Length: 87
Image 1 (tube, rainbow, N blue to C red):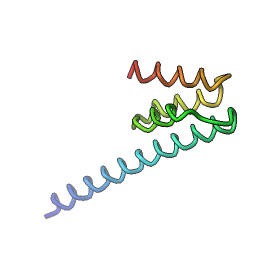
Image 2: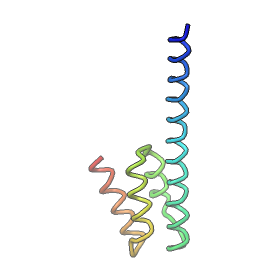
Image 3: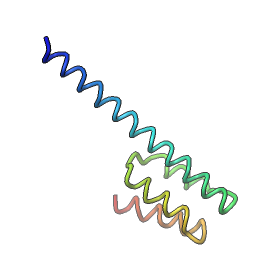
Image 4: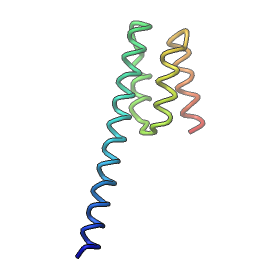
């Protein structure tokens, strides 16, 4: 019985960890758009659409950094396209 309880507890922790990672990706996505809006005014629909298809935490982290430093929204759009080509 203890093995079953350990398995269930481990499974629950795995699910909880997955949910937390998904939430982090959602937050990163939201912050990317907010940063871009604050810096450039509007965000092209294509950018938000492409952002919505990725669930990669590392990629979202890289894109968050890029959103803060690119000199133009067009450059962010290109970075986004390039990232999706390589991933």
